[in-house]
Image 1 (cartoon, rainbow, N blue to C red):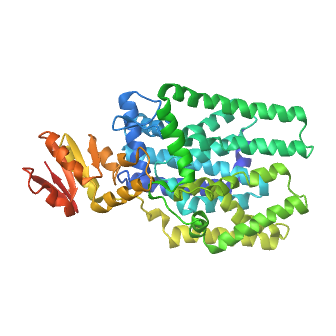
Image 2 (cartoon, rainbow, N blue to C red):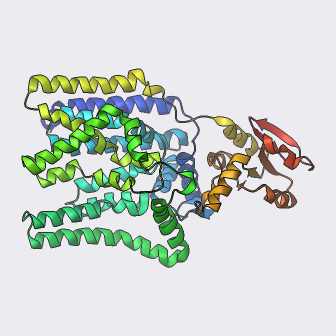
Length: 488
């Protein structure tokens, strides 16, 4: 047992050393310098998770007492459970450390995945190095989010497909974190097995067995959707299926606009022009080895390009959001490093090249860009206002600033909002730190009704530009935080 452990350490020491370094570097940063939950993802999942446990309701996330039918329950549930389990730590620390742990497991899967393709531990370690230090992955490793769970589920399903219940578990992680897109591995595997059957690599009975397994996995998880349709009927169909899925594909909802080349441009900005060019070479190299020289099998090609169809799908969608790229980051990192395999038989050139690439990635991330000091969080005026108002107010109404009101009105006129668009305000984190009901208002014409029905300990927060709205009232200004004015 000890000998086997020593052999594993010896064979994979570069990867193990990097993972330990990454864990210590990011973990120390999260622990020693905790910051408030930021907008958007973090505050949404922190608050919805907290409400799920307070209300003992776990079918869907809850937001200010309302059922958030847009999202499956897993991510909110996890981020609600972690602070309860690790009650001795600040939620801003425990939940982010848990996210970091998930990202480490994902990197282990990434290493295993591409090691099976290129058969070189040094090169596979470089792929993980590039993945981990890509800005999107680096950010998603440190903040509360769904995307890292989705990637974990996909890769876990790929590795443990032959183990029925374990693969089902990982598929469930993907589905109950990101809903329908979590089923991504099912059609990929189905197409692969059908291809193997037509190329005579898989018999008819084996094909039927594989398709039955895939269908059973999908059917088990689809039962949840059937139950939710029975319970919530048309409301679930409209919010969860139509608005949260199909409209994101067909329209640039909620100001998530972008050029047709949005995700292609994002790849260049994340990896740089040289690495992006290398990805193109990597694709050509894979095609050459599969179609011309026949040096890689169909199964190796499946592993090599397992995540690539997601990138193709992203470029067909109308809603453009940068973090949607996360699940394909390991794929792109692999393609960027793959061309180095051209020199794998020339050891005197191959290993110095690998060393130079690894050194360049490490230098750019740690020395030049100082990722250890990168901050995704800030305190902000809205944070201080929320904490101050928590002890002064029973409830709070927040009037959106004029620009936000204009944007919302324009989007609504263009039919680019969904049912829950108006729930969040500019800063959902205000709800978490105020810890009491907040009413976000997007139309100044609603203010007379708000003023007429408010209770003595209810507060109003407005932008300083709108201070005339309250000029003829008997409200008193409690404090000012930047452009925010707080009245009661």
